[in-house]
Length: 393
Image (cartoon, rainbow, N blue to C red; front, side, top):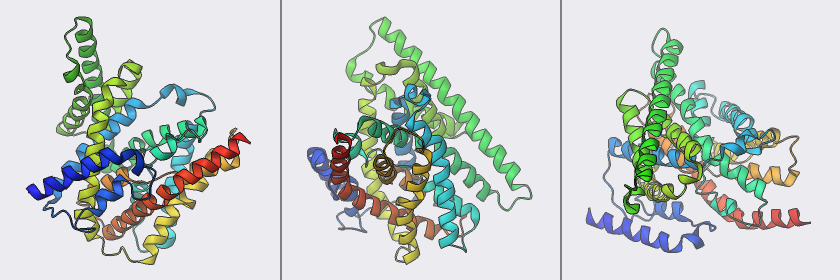
C-alpha cells in the first residue's frame, strides 16, 4: 500500500513540476500515468475490485462534468452563427451516427445497440488533452474557443445517450424493453436535472448570503464548488436519478447565474478533477486494459483510427459548412478531437452491463485513447504553428 502511495505521489509531483513541458509532448501526463500501471512499466501493484474502480470513475466524472459546465460560455452558444453550437447540435449527432456505421462495417456480429454504445463512448473529446491547442496563441481565437466549448460540453451531452443505451441493453429481456428503458431514462434524467438545479440555487443563495454578511474564509471558500459537484452527484444517485446529469446541470446553472464570480471558486475543483483524472488513468491501465483480450485484432485498431479521423472529421466538416472558417481551420478542428478521460470513464461504467461484445468495446476504447494520446500529442504543436502561419498570410 505504501509503495503504491509513494509511486503515485512521486508521479503527481513529477507531473505537477513538468506539466507545462509535458502537455505538448507525445509522452504527456495521461500516458505517463497509464504506463506506470501493471500493464505498462509495472511500477504499481494495485488490487482493485469493480466497486473501487467504479467509485473512482464516478467521482472523477462528476467533478469534471461540473467544472466543464461551470466554465462554459453560454452566451457564445446563443450567438446565431456560433461555431461551438454547430459542433454540438450538428457535429456531435453526426459523429454518433458515423461511429455506429463504422462499427456496423467492422464488427458485423456486434448487436446494434452495442454498436451505438461504442460510438457514444468514443464521441466525447477531452479538454485536458487538447490544452496544447486551445492554449496556443498561434491558433486563431475562434478555433480555440470552438474546441474549448465543444470539449467542455459534449461529454455531458453524451451522458444521457449512454444512460439510455444502457437502459435498453439492461431491459433487453423484457417484453417491452423500449417502454421500460424510456421510463427509466426519463426518471434518471428528470431527477438529475431537478436535483442539480435545486442544489445549485440553494448553494448559490448561501454563497450570496455569506458574502453579504462577510461570513466567508477564503481557504474554505475554495472547497464550495467541488463539494457542490459531489453533493449534486450523490444526492441524485440516492434519489434514483443520474448523478452525472445532476453535476452537469448544477455546473451549468452555477456558471450561468454567477458568471465570473464562480471562476475563482472552481480553481480548487479543477485541481481535484485533474488529480482524480490522472489516478483514473492509472487504474484504467491496471484493471481495464488487461481485460481487453481483443486488443491485437486489426479491426480494433482500424476502428480506433477511423474514430479519430474520418468518423469525426467528416461530421465536423459538414457541421461547419457555410461558416467563415477556412477549409484548413475546419480540418484542424476535425482532427483535434482527442479522446481521453470521458471515454475511459464510460468504458469503466459499462463493465457490469450485460454486453455480448464487451471485450471488443473496451479494446476499441483502449486503442483509440492510446492512439489519441500519441498522435494528437505529436501533431499539436506543428499543427498549431501551421494554422497560425496560414491565418496570418
